[in-house]
Length: 386
Image (cartoon, rainbow, N blue to C red; front, side, top):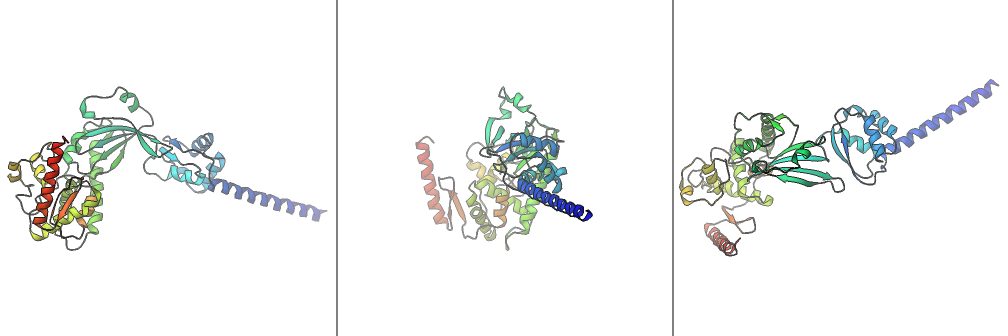
């Protein structure tokens, strides 16, 4: 009898073991396999939320098949305590494993509503935008110049939304004075910037900020990022450049930044200035003349006068030899890269070609022909009222 009982118990144990193994295998497939979500959703994770709360919400939105498996999988992978607050885009058919990674990896939010304060070269703009889950792209809801005096009626209500995120974006080529002045209109920041940051020391980039952040702290983060970028690219610079310090690289990069907005041209533009520096030819670049007139405090808003081309300022490269003493704007990574790794050319000149880009030349005669063509294009545009 005991032998029969033992045999039955062993059989039952084996059956239970196999059932448990099968259950674990099924749960693993549920956790790692494609999920039931048919359309993308924007998942909001509130500060202090738990995996239990998120699992129930995901189950309610039919993004996962089983909240318990989701919680156990997050716990087994040791990610239960890594949940990040924010708004996250969950794509169709995302597995539970993928969703856990999305809400725990950190970084910027990937969907929801965002107020982006964009500081451009000419003006600043407050942009209220939200991500369309179907496309993953931002859709602009509202945009206005905060310094223009005309604030939309619905701005206050939209500004008070609980899930609103805040961002400050610097365009390439803005000056430090512009950044400090424009940040005064960012009503979600606090405090004053005591000292004007050195020209060129701010990284054109996108910065996610918290309401109430000190403007000085944001400036410090902009400076930190630019220092990291410059240090990284300086270490990978080309050999034999006629610049000897990272500071000179920043100056050259700022000139490249202001001379062209065409990404593919940066390396060629940089090569012209590098070739001129090597041969001891003055740079003769208009943006440096403009900076000597405005000191970066506002766009010139008109053409350069002949008297300004002849005026002796520390930045007027028609008058001085070599590089000016400081950058003339805050260059982006691509322009710094171009200054430190320019194209290998023998160009010494360039002029606008009427398409938004430039015509490059090796000789003065060739350059003069390019200039004549540009003058003809300018005359035709004036005649057409452009």
